[in-house]
Amino acid sequence: MTRRLPVLCALLLAGCGGERGASSSADPARLDPIARRYVVLALALGHHDSNFVDAYYGPDSLKAAADAESLSVPQVRAAAESLIAVLGDRIPTYADSLVGLRHQYLRVQLGAMATRARMLGGERLSFDQEARALYDAEPPHYPPAHFDSLLARLDSLLPGREPLDARYQRFRDRLNIPAPLVDTVFKTAIAACRARTLAHLALPRGERFDLEYVKGTSWNAYNWYKGGYHSLIQVNLDFPIAIDRAIDLACHEGYPGHHVYNALLEQALSRGRGWVETTVYPLYSPQSLIAEGSANYGIDMAFPADQRVTFERDSLFPLAKLDQRLAERNAAVRQVVERLNYARNEVARSYLDGQIDSAGAVREMSRYWLSTAAASAKTVRFIRDYRAYVINYNLGRDLVAAWVGRTAGTDPENRWRAFGALLSAPLLPRDLAAPGPALASP
Image (cartoon, rainbow, N blue to C red; front, side, top):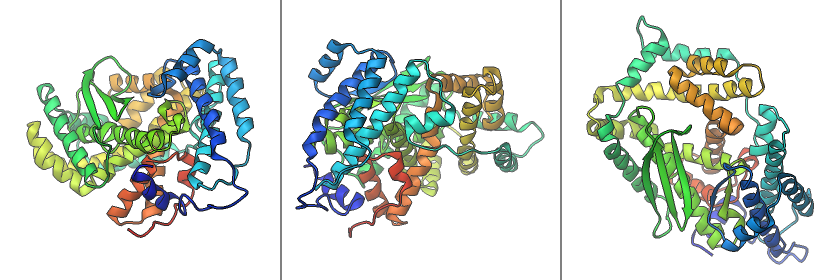
């Protein structure tokens, strides 16, 4: 058992042994063969969907089994549905309450796997159906008036006679990091995010990451987790990078985002518990809402708004040789644009449900996210490739924020403890929607 688990149990449950001694409790070992089969099925589906397996660092024997069986997509679906039937509709009572979370996690993740197999077989789902089936979440609907009110707020922050999109782009152009300074700014931001994370969370010894710069992708940055507490973080240089993206990406991809989430899961569950299912990360699954949501909320954990603007103004702006006087206004603009992020969901819903074509989607993105035609086309390309996955960034972030708030209140140290517990547990989006548990005394 790792040193994180006692804290985790106190935060998430009424103690890991809340039912200890109950003679009617189920045998936790019954989940182990299901977990191994889950991994084999995930790897098998990855043979048909190159994006499905985002990371795998588990036993070579399970990969060999997936390769040897060479299951078809319908066979993966049927096998996943069979395992769901074995798990049943009701979670039995376990002496260790964390095992109950494991039981539910396996069942819901298998459901998403079966859905993805159905989609690969040609079944079409609406945007909302896909969000529920793959990510265990109900995306909200916002009318155009909601975004129009946010644009009006942005208009007041960026006064002028030009159209708002031109004013916004001109303002953002003043914040772009000169290409020769990108690496220096990024590494400074990563070091700050890591230091702030380590002040509150105990990370595994030897954790590390490599940083690479790439071009030609539909995403801005990506964390490829390799296992052994090691990540490869890639940053896309296709477009200029604004100064505030340094903190965003350093926290989201690194500390306390994806790198920390994967490392803590490996430490607490893969190694600490021997739960093999956490060695595979199926991209199109509820785990992605937890991963993306915690990574985005991790930005606020590491850099509360007032601290962030101070750090950017006093440290990053000078490194990038940018006008420090823009930092406060940029922070105010960013807060509005972050809420406009939900417009991407609405565009995705209309586009994927066939209400608008790709050209219309590009126009709507440019209108409501004030991005250039090229940047909007890149976003639509991402939507085409990853579909309802877009909800994981904004809805995921808001669900994590609400859960941490209910669980820990306003005390910063309690919030970090709750956040660290979240990163170490087999939680699902439905768990974030439920009332948070009471915190144990520090």
